Image 1 (cartoon, one colour):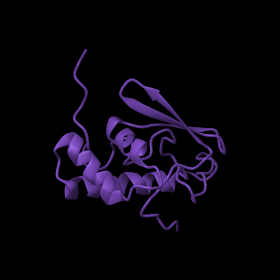
Image 2 (tube, one colour):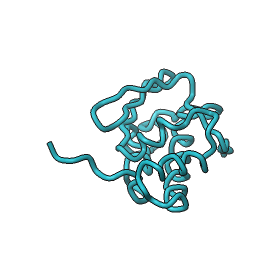
Image 3 (spheres, rainbow, N blue to C red):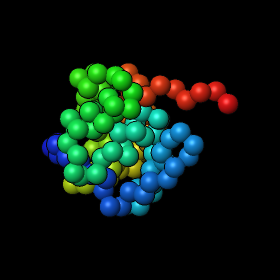
Image 4 (cartoon, rainbow, N blue to C red):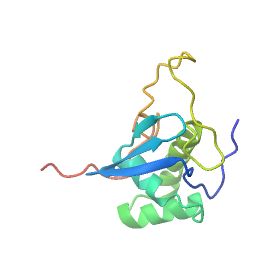
Length: 127
């Protein structure tokens, strides 16, 4: 089991791209693509290896008005998903989903793609 850093950073082999209101990640080590929802995108963009998870919650509180304790619970879920996919420094990349029987969509880490926990940021306005 991977121990999470209190000051996580993206793995050097993970490339970040921006698409309108979300982030798309590409892991060079296994060729997987991860499409993040706006909430997970906001967390990902704040993970720099210098900010603690508490500081990430404080920063998002300033942006959203949501209480840091509520945000921290969601941030912990998202960061755990990032680590489980091997997207953070010090973690190993996820293996081949078909080979290990994992039927979870590899582009969407569970909490990172909005499948778990409350949304950190409000939905973007309709065009």
